[in-house]
Every structure is written in structure tokens, then in C-alpha cells.
Length: 274
Image (cartoon, rainbow, N blue to C red):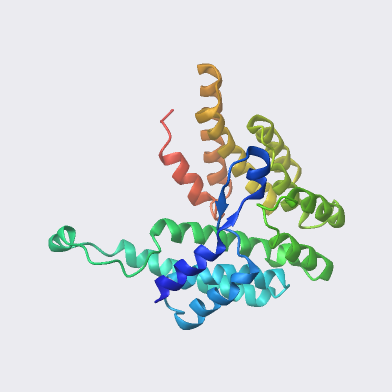
């Protein structure tokens, strides 16, 4: 039953991506944004099957909406529950092995949530946890209000860029959320080389902030994209690869406890050695 509810909820979340339709005339759907009208399905999954792996996804989507209503304490409770369940599931998965008979005739899986899904959800929870941390929220209600508005912005919305512009105007230069808004704006830059340059500026201008730290990771990741996909000379490609590898190594060294360090290590592990 939790699997059926999970699929029902995910199918309900499928929404046409208007940005892609307008810009490229391609019909594309997304399901990674929690639509408010689908909350009853996720609530039922969470309430009726609270211990199921599928309910972890429900917790993340509920946490987003709770944070959007400035219910940060309850949102943090959802985050903590989700992260604990993820660790438990990953440990269970790592400790399990198939017998010879099970390798030949496999039983239906007890859950449709894979290790990949768990790691993806873990990063989403940790990102939300960072946004609603005391360092970002503080005691100023206006900061909390802006943070709530930022969290529930839909990056697939055709007005997303304008919404970010408005929030940045409201936040001003000294708001704890400013780095996150500027980072979100920069990630919209289509030219990857220009995006990498701007990410470097954010990392420098907002050094030590959560947005500045993430910008450093994103910059290294974009340089990997440039190395893989751009039509450049061999020398230029080697330059971007070396910079990406160096950037990821430095990121891990300087931010060992950051939730993005695990992903940085995964990226490094599949790259050619220097």
C-alpha cells in the first residue's frame, strides 16, 4: 500500500515545465517540486505508513510546506526524522546480501526507494536544514518571512527569475539570505563559462556563508560540465578538468562536514587521475 500511495503522489506531482516549453518548444515534465494540492496524498502516506521508506519522501515535501508557512520548528522535526530514517535504511541496505537462490529468483522489493533515492533525499533534507538553521533565520521575523518565501519558490516556474529579483530587493545586502538568493540567480545563467566565473565571485564575496560554500562546490561542478560538454581545445579541456579536480579537493579539505563534501568525493572518484 505505501508503494501504491507513493506512485500516486509522484504521478500527481508531474507538472509541465513551462520554461522549457516557452524557450525550446519541448514538452517536459517535472516532479521534484511539492505542489500544495498534492499534500493530502503525502499526508496519508506519512500518517498511515510512517515507518515505510516511501514516507521519507513525504516528510521532505511536508517539511518544505511547513517551512513555507514559517513553521520552522515543525519543519526541522520532519528533517530530523527523515535524516534518521535515511541513515537507518542505508545501513540496512549495506548490511544485506542476496543468497544464491535469491540471486536466481528475486522476490519483489519491499520498497521502491533505492539507495540513490535515499542519498538524493538526504541532500535535500540537509539543504533545507541549512536554510532554516538559526544562522540563517535568527530572531528577526522579517528574515524568517523572506526565508519561507524563498524555500517555496518553484525553480520551474516561468516567473522564478523575477521572484528571485523581488526577494533580493526585499532582502538587501546584509540579510543572511542574500547569498542564497544571489546563488540561485547565478545558477540560472545559461552560459556555463560565465556561470563558473560568477560562482567564483559569490564564493569570494560570501566566503564562509552557506551560499558561498555551495557556490564553491557548484563552480567546480560547472567546470566539470565544461570539460565534458564544451567544444574546446585539448589544452583548454585539460585546464578545466584540472581546475575542477583541484576545486573539489580543496572543497572537501576546507568543508569536511558540509553535506556537499560527500557528493564532491563521489565526483572525484570517477574522474581520470592527474
